[in-house]
Length: 170
Picture 1 (cartoon, rainbow, N blue to C red):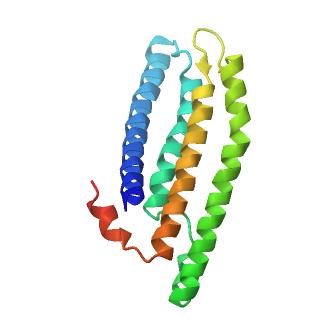
Picture 2: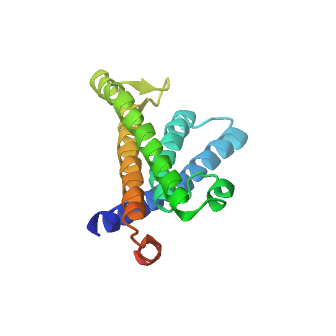
């Protein structure tokens, strides 16, 4: 199914972007620590960049975690019930996940546009970090998470075998 393959590819690309971003942040933090230690001069804005980047990384990784079925679930409970009850519990979980991310989307929408319109920034001094990109990434990531819960629901409702497609869709 095209929607499933597209979701898989986007999830993997977003995970790679998040990994590269996190790896880059490690070097920024290292440079800031070395600059503080040896030059007694901190790199301006490091704290603000890291704060916003952590949110971005989380929302880029969340879609992958959902799609790869790595999100939190009670395996002990699910493994002790019949397959029919297991399917019902999983679908309820997917619906709750979809509801959660729907609330995230609708709750973040106005704040993101206000931050963009007002030119909202974090930080003081030499480096001010705009907040609107992070706010829009929260919306984008939430939409993708919502869609991935929908994909999982479709896979489980129609008994589509997505384990092979997920593993081989590189």
